[in-house]
Amino acid sequence: MHKIMNKIPVSVLIPAKNEEANLPACLASVAIADQIFVVDSQSSDRTPAIAEELGAELVQFYFDGKYPKKKNWSLENLSFRHDWVLIVDCDERITPELWQEIRQVIQQSEYTGYYLNRRVFFLGAWIRHGGKYPDWNLRLFRHEYGRYESLGTEHIPNTGDNEVHEHVVLKGKAGYLKQDMLHEDFRNIYHWLERHNRYSNWEAQVRLDLLNGKGDEGSIGSSFLGDAVQRKRFLKKIWVRLPFKPLLRFLLFYIIQLGFLDGRAGYIYGRLLSQYEYHIGVKLYELQKFQGQLNLRK
Image (cartoon, rainbow, N blue to C red; front, top):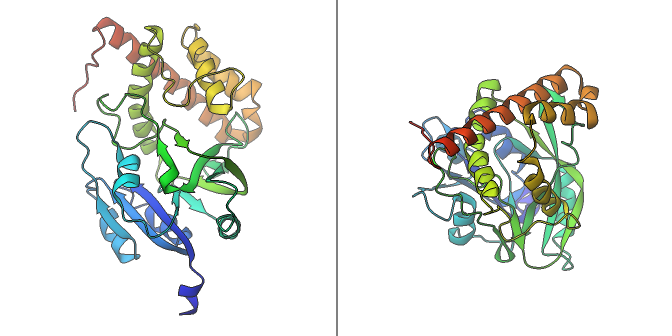
């Protein structure tokens, strides 16, 4: 009874697919929340069993290739017991210190959402430089007031069924929490490469749209004088037209943004980002050559 009384009145949403390596630690880090949903995409490993064994409410999501993807579908269809929802990926952890801060801020009414700062770990090292920190994500909000924007990219093949690049559009003001959220994937480099192979499909199509004047501004828009997301989208319009992007990506991360201060992990991360940039360029060339249709096979 004492533990139940100490539960924090927040509903946690965890999107998942084949996350048996990460899910136990993720669920342990959010166990203090009063309600926890794991929204699965027909995992072939023990993800569903782990979710149920550790007390989460398991829901299956079936993506039909159209809007909405997993997070927006969950925000629209799950039976949340609480006003506040916290979205946590399987490779993320909410620390006790962050939970205490969450407990305090949800009792206030000034904001309808809060940004969490994510601390990314790679090969066991905190990637503190290279533009990876601070890394603000709007993850805690009153669920009736926030939805992920649609960039019109749901149709792109082999990109997954979960919002990754889309941002939350919030009705009302957002604040910033002081304590960090931890991001550490317990899987190996193979899964990093697999994930970014999907991301590069998405990015290539978005860049083709930018070059064709369609843009990817979504509901948030792009502006050099706007917030961090708007500035990033404004600069992307310039970035897509620059030459030697794989080399520029490495120099930006490793030299200009001081990624070298993160040691060997920083160097490897920078090289992988450069490779990722090259893959985007190759897939963009393929799209242009074959009239906008990715020549992909499962």
